[in-house]
Amino acid sequence: MKSLFLVAVGVLIAFPLFSMTYYTMVRTSTPEFCSSCHEIRPAYLAWMASTHVNNGQGIVADCMDCHLPAPHDTYDFFYSKTFHGIKDVVAHFTGGAETYDRAVMRQRVYDTLDNSQCMKCHRNILHLPGKRGAMLAHRQVLYPRPGYEYRCTDCHRNLVHVDRGYYNYKQFAPPYQATGL
Image (cartoon, rainbow, N blue to C red; front, side, top):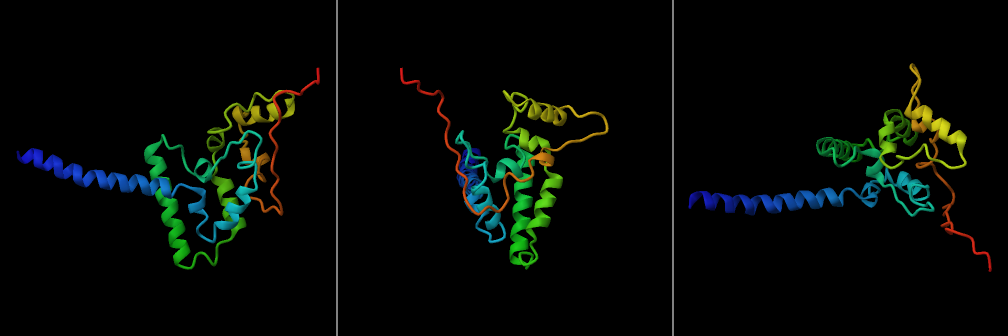
């Protein structure tokens, strides 16, 4: 009887705790939450105007897709998310926000961004019909010669967090052209 009571108490404690943790992780994983700090707001607006949001395929790559490990790497994901979150909150409330230099932070991210972060979404970069030069450049990234290391951001540096004066919405291309017959 005592063990049944302990199991019931454990469930009553564990379920709400798990639910709150899950809700917190989901709630804090949105781009809107990331942009709630005024230091990140310009990066959010630049992201909204980028091809990672506005593209012909309708696919959206959000903050976590690029800035955190894949969620299936559970330990690394939770550790990175917690570490970056605490670091940003401490900087926000201790005056680090006044010294937040977007150019320095952007360079720091480019220096530490691993190609595998890009490859989570861009897996098939060697199949680019009609674009032989791009295919050959991507081959150098995937299969570098000894002594050479190429990073995705070497060529694709100005895709996402670049201030733009306008939103460049891409149009969906029709799958075929009507011939009028």
